[in-house]
Amino acid sequence: MAKVGKLFTILGILIMLVSVVVGVIFAVTGFGKVADMADNAFVIEGSVTRQFDAGDEIFLFGQSSGTDYERPNCRFDGPAPTTTVTSGFNTTFTYDGRSVKSYQGVGFTESGSYTITCDSYAVATSEISAAGIFQSVGGVLLTVFGGGAGAFLAVVGGILWIIGASRKQPPTTYPPAASGGYPNYPPPGGYPNYPQAGPGYPPADPGGYPVNRPPDNWNR
Image 1: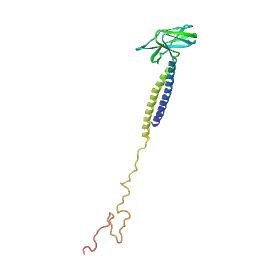
Image 2: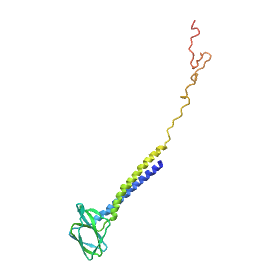
Image 3: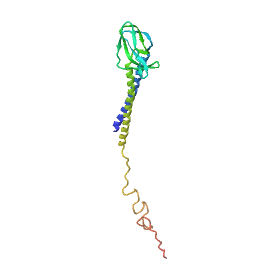
């Protein structure tokens, strides 16, 4: 269990770090592309004349109006008719303090000067950075969900690691007690090195101590 927990912890930390780093890079790069889209935009109020090359495309944006967005009617006068460009997604961004949303794409078939006339406020930009939009959103999602998944895996692995390590610790042992009680108590018969009975010494009682008896002339 300890090895599995260690592996989960390392993988979780790596996933979390990679997700956060890559996600932040993607998000910053994607938002930068969206910012470039706003920098290339221009406002159409009434009419404006611009130079376009064959193959160029622009996208028209209407400003927010309550809960919906306006869709101005615009006319293009130039050397050749324009074509309608279909976009598979709608883009919203803030331009000059106003929230605008794309609603129409226009393609130019011949190079020249074109006059664009719209019946209400509109914003046009030369490109919609789909890659930038998806990249920025994907970077944020990768940072949040990838980093969160990595952190969760690291926490689970840390718990398993701790539990497995605690099970491997040997039990605490104590030295065995001496047989028969406490060690090194003197045996019956006296303490060691106590003088034994002999000439000039009174006899010892069974406990090893000398017998206290009255002198021989006690009753005289």
